[in-house]
Structure formats: C-alpha cells, structure tokens
Length: 466
Ligand code: ADP
Ligand code: MG
Image (cartoon, rainbow, N blue to C red; front, side, top):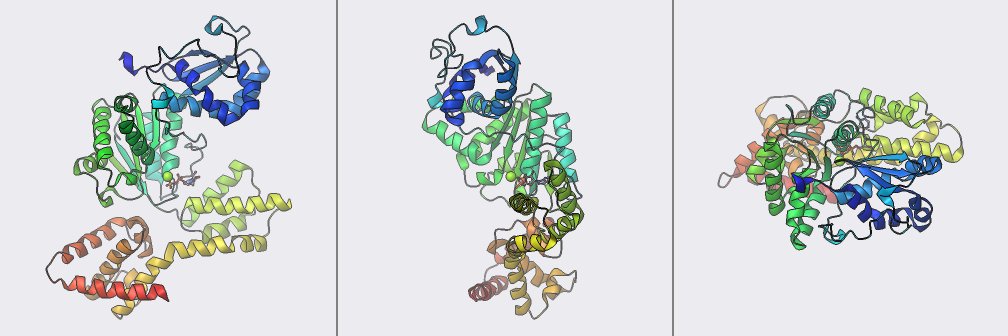
C-alpha cells in the first residue's frame, strides 16, 4: 500500500537537528557536511561520501546515532549503508550545508508529518544483544531456541511468542537478538519498543490528535517486539489499542513477540481479550541460571570483552551471586574497573573485599523478605522453616506452606518464579496454585484463613520493625 511506504530521505532530512544535538556542533560541522543522502529502499538508508577517511571514521563513529535518530522518525529500525562515491551528483545538487545535510529546498510540502507531531519514543536495538553473545543454560535454552527459530522464520509456528521471567535474566537480550538478526539479514521492518514507550506514544498521539499516524506506524511493521508488557496493567485505553494492533498484525501473519516479568496469568487489570492474545501461541519462561551457567556466562563475558580474571575468582562470583545475570555482570564490571585502575590483575583477597557489599546486598535482596515470611509462618505454626521449604505432604505443613507462599506474593514484589526458588526450588505453577487456593478460601464468609492471615501479617510487620 502506498501510504505504508516511508520516505527515508525525508526521515534523514528531518533527523538533522537531532543528530546535530547528539554529536555536538563541532563534529556535525566537520563530518556531516561531507555526508549525503544517496538512495534508499523500504528498509535501508544509503548515505554517501566522497572520501575514504570520512567513510571509515565517520561511518564507525556516527552510524549508531544516525540509525537511532532516523529510526525514531521512520518508526522502525532502519538499516544503514555508507558508500564512497567520487562525485556528489544530481541526487544532492544543492550545496552541502552543515545545518542541513542534503536537505531538499523545501520538504514541508511533501512531508505529511512535521517533526513536532511525530512521536519520539521509538526504542533502539542494542547491537550487542545477539544470539552469539547469549550463553544458554538449562534455565534459558527453551527461550533461546524459540527466539532463534522465530528469527529464522518470523510469523511461523511461534506466533505470537511470550518470554517471561524475573529481572536481569536475559529477556530484553533475547527479544532484541531477534530484532538484530532480522534487521541484519532481511528486509523486514522490525519495531522494538518497551510497553512504557508504547503507552507514552499512545497518550501523545491522543493528545496531539495524531492517532492515525500512531496506528499506521504500528500497522506497517513486519515484526513487532514489545518488551515488559507488565507496564500495561491498568492502562485500559492503551490495552484496547494494542489489542487492535495485535489483531491487525496477527491476521496478516506478522510476527509479534512480548516479554513480561511474570506469567501473564499474574498480570492484574489486563482485559480478558488482551490476556487471551498474550497467551495465544508460544509462552516460554527463563529461570535464574544454575552455578555452571553462571560461571559459563562470566567466562564468556571475559573472553568477549578481553578481561583477564582468574578462574577461581570467577567461580567465587558465580557461587555467591545467584540472583540474575545483570548482578553477575555488575560484579565483573567492578572487578575490571578496579584492575584497570591499579593496572594489575586482581587477587582473590582484593576481589572478596571489592565485592563484599554487592554480595551481601545480593543475598539480602534475594532471600531476606521471603525468608522472614517463611520464618514467621514456621514459628506461628510451630514447625521449622525447612518444613515449609521441604517436600512434606503432611496436611498441616502443606497448608502452612501455602499460606506462606500467598503471603510472600502479597507482601513482596517477587514474581511467582522467584518465590518458587525461595520455597525450595519449586516451579512457579505450584506457587500460583497455592495462591489461588488461599484466595478461594478467603472468599468464604468469616473465613478462618482470613483470620490466620491477619494474625500472620501482624507478626510479620512486627518482625520487620525489629
Ligand atoms: P531482563 O530483560 O530479563 O531484565 P536483560 O536482557 O536486560 O534482562 O539482561 C541483563 C544483562 O544480562 C544484559 O546485559 C544481558 O546481555 C545479560 N545477560 C542475560 N542473560 C544472559 C545470558 N544467558 N548470556 C549472556 N548475557 C546475558
Ligand atoms: Mg528487560
């Protein structure tokens, strides 16, 4: 359809002020007066320059910012090519000006949207989030394989796909790896956005009466990647718009991938019809990595970034940082920064000292609040915390365990996946089952369970004050 086509020359022209702000006046004047629009197809913008120096240096230095700013205007992630051509020929006969790179005399006539009424919240793909830089383990291999399959055959068997799991476990990395693969290897239009930005764009488009542009932007992509759909909770109107977008894309065989920090069934205030769409297709979870995977990730990151760190130190980190990959990475960064500073390899003693706080906070964060709940519930029922975490099916223990699981859910921000880990490595479905069971007991008038929960909440609150 003609109105689906985006004129990337126009987008490049419109992006000039934003590029200038991003790179600074001096670099802009030096380099961008020598870079010109050459041509474009549906997906890729080709720029040209007459000298090899500009091609090599500016190409490396500015391609990210060019892609980012032009993509923002285009509404999808563009591909960029830079070529060296001797003559600055007819395509840009106008005198190059540092203020207006290759800008035609007047674009306002032909441009249906002015920069003002476009939305500027389009997210960028991080080029380092690829399948090669992801280390799959037992915890993530299913999600990893699903994403790879999608990137080979978008709109195929796994449409839509939902990846869910706790923070820092690689959801954004994987969803973006799909995007990066497709941008590099196909001409398909990929749009990656967080649900927060989707909401912002939607609100802006309502306020600025540019709803049709908003709709067009999302309806013309081939692949829609929406990260962190949990932020759509309570956003009724955005949900309705996403529902329509979903139907439009899905009915025409286009691929949609979502991520969420919890199973969809745990999202609150999501319309049933949208929840039903999220749950259609393939749903895969990512669990926290086991020790071996944590170590493999640390080793991989060292090789990737050329860090030299003793393997004993890496295993120390892998043993002690059990929460997620983001925390592992931040410990590694700390070690490397220090080693750069002192210009020496780090010893185990230094590593322990440096990571003391991170490891303590890590352990606190991952266990304390749930551990407190388990302890309080165990004391209350006169059993041990091990019973609560253990496998005993004895009725009194099993029901105390279910109450503790319910309390952990309502009293902390942890997802059922994370709660499952604290309750002796149980699956999130077990936690969800327990929560549902307690909830149904609470609906009974004068429920005994409600009285118990009230007493336990008082005990837990008192414990928190100590
Ligand atoms: P999430 O979106 O689940 O919160 P991210 O995708 O942002 O997590 O991952 C956090 C960081 O950890 C990123 O830098 C990512 O590259 C890295 N990471 C996560 N899982 C892996 C993995 N299995 N292998 C390599 N890096 C990973
Ligand atoms: Mg993320």
